[in-house]
Structure formats: C-alpha cells, structure tokens
Length: 310
Image (cartoon, rainbow, N blue to C red):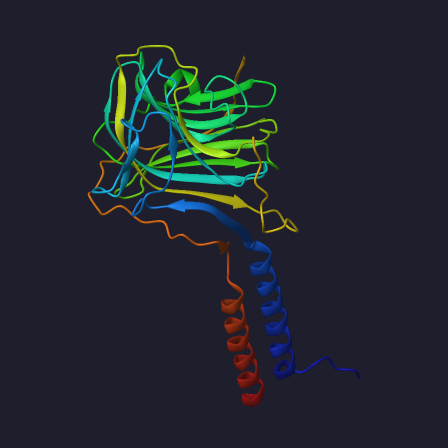
C-alpha cells in the first residue's frame, strides 16, 4: 500500500509554500514613487512671482507668505519636472485672513497660469456666497472643466467649511490610469480628515510644468484679500510598472458637473508641531526588500527547527 508523505515531512513543505506566496504578495504590493520637488522653506526656495511685496519667503517664520487679490493677475510659481503621469502634491496651509470674495489657490499648471483655461488642476480655499468652502478644480487641454466644492449641493454631502487661524494639510492627487483626481484636507495638528473628494472621468490633463499660486483670470473684488502662509510643499510622481525613474521636464470653458466620492468629518484640532517633509529623491511604499529578506530568513530557520524536532 502506497503512503503519502509523513506529517513531519509535509508540515515544513506546506509552510515553505505559504512563505513564498506571502513574500510574492508583498513584492507585488510595492509602489514606487519619486519626489521631484520638496521644500520646507528653511532656506529661500527661489519661487518666481510678479508681486514680491505681498508674496515672498518669510525667513523668520520659515514659511512662504501669500497675499492674493482678485483682478491683480498675481502669480507665484516654481518649475517642476512633470510629463503628465500620476502625481501627489502636498502642502501645509495656514490661512490667517480670507475676505469675502477672495480665494487662495495652489496647484499644478502650465505657463499661462490661468484659473479659467487649461491646462491646470488646483485646490482652492474660497470665501464666497456659501461661506468658506474648499474646491477641487481641473481643466484639460480642451478647456473642459471638472470641479466640486465642499458645499452640500455641489458634492452631495453635508457642507464643510474651513476657518482662518487653523492650519491644514492638503493633498492634491491625480491618477492617470483611473482618470481621476482627488483632494484631501485634514487638520494639520492631528491629521483628522476635514473633507475629501474624488472626481472621475478626468481626461488627460496635458503639459504642466509648475507648482503655482494664481489669480490670473479672476476679476471679482480687487479690495478682497486672502492672506496666510504655506509650508512643507512636496510633489511626488507615482510610477507605473516599467516607467523610467527620471522624469523629463516640459515647458509648457465648458462646465461639467463631476461625479465622485467624498469623505469628511469635522473634529476639533489638537495643537502639535507641524511635520517636516524630508527632501529625498526616491521612495518605495509597501514592504521594503530588506525586510522581506529578513522575514524569509526567519521563516527558513523556523522550518529547519521543525524538521529537526520531528
């Protein structure tokens, strides 16, 4: 009569298969990205502006000071290498004064730096008819606009508003494969989510070569001003499998209501120091390879121990 493998031999064999499957899954889950720009404003970032009197690096505070008025066509920008792939742009916002009919805008755009024509994608903190609300806006190469705000009738949830004097962490993201773009606003003090939204069916955004603050194309109230500071600005390119790790620098309206996904809760902030984004060149999210090797060695030792004991 033919017998199968004894239990003492089968157990290490099965355990080995489980280990290999687990390691393979961890390797597949890794996601590679490159930080193409990062500044914590501890030194002069060299940003370009047509109004350095109101928009400038504040050496004493270690932040960038902004004061934006409509109808002035003020712009501030820093060129970054971007070729149209998926990205994540993050910054800390310290709004100190946002007058009625004024707005703070930060995002990615082309050399026109207009808020009303492509190509651009930006976050906006506006004080308007519905109070101090947040916006996500994108305009593609055909000047087709996709946008949503934190006002209830815009995105379908409860109205969510920001407040002057409270710092926030903002993430602007774009997923080229899913054709979606998103905004995530959280309290800087404890990273509790304030509001988030994802726009779907976003077409290819086209060439954009700069992080920007802009009022170009806004002609509402020249006496209203949005003032405050920004800090810890970083832009990360999310690489697809096989995509080269060296991006190449580029030089560089119809209203469509966007469907999307929203998240948001309002939690009182807790005062803690603002985080600093390290200026690195490459990062890998997921389980790092050295950790995988260590785990494999440990599991291998366990197999040998079981085999000898049996």
